[in-house]
Length: 343
Image (cartoon, rainbow, N blue to C red):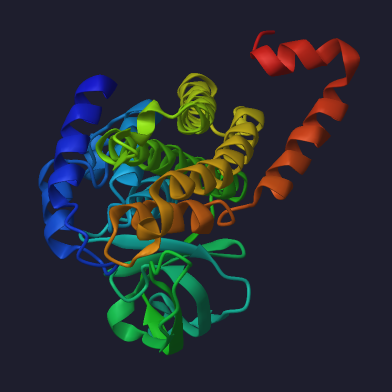
């Protein structure tokens, strides 16, 4: 199923990639909803497609490759999962999710729901989504964005929305106690989703560099014939292969054992994909020369995402620290089973 999904996703995202900007792509989102990709891993009984995390890996990799301007990770892997796990109905439309520890939450008048006040900081796609699933202490809240005010229209380096949303005594009727698994799974889900996007964006950047090198003629021959360019592209290709191997292995590990048990594989995947991002962005821009930095160029769209996503949901340093801690915890006898995923 994953190979078929990858082909479909590449067609959907490739057709939508017009270089028009970095705002939310409403038309693409309609297509994503119609094809069942928006809530791919949500169970069918909850309105999803019932796919696996490996299925999501195929779709997210394609989304990263074509710099898709839609909140797939936020809607499917985070918000829809969190709401369903808390026993809340998953609403239609694009969703986002965040962790907020500074909200004031009080029982609403009449005992129905709660009144929420405070600021949700740097909510991914905040101005574009219909609702935000908020993990607030020991509660899960479903916040309708029509009742919030965008205090700051922020962006990440790729100019994807990262907005501050203010709620002032907003009545939230959908409130549930947080499932114990959520506190562990939420950061792991976010990290794996971002790593898969990174791996896809790296693949897209290298594909563009290879194509450009075969088309750009200098001194009477394509620059792809130059040994230095060939070596650089080979190094970038190796980085793409390593990122893909790490992220896809982590997705398979989740399907087999669950997110908590796959935490080591996820940490390694996010760290490795982040490392690949820096190398791939550097090499592909070197191959393109200055034109790759212009605003309308497709390369800029994927490399700015490489630079932005490598630091979101935990940097390489953060996840490498987790990898090191697990290795030390395993000890000499447990290191090989930890690395290979064997008992």
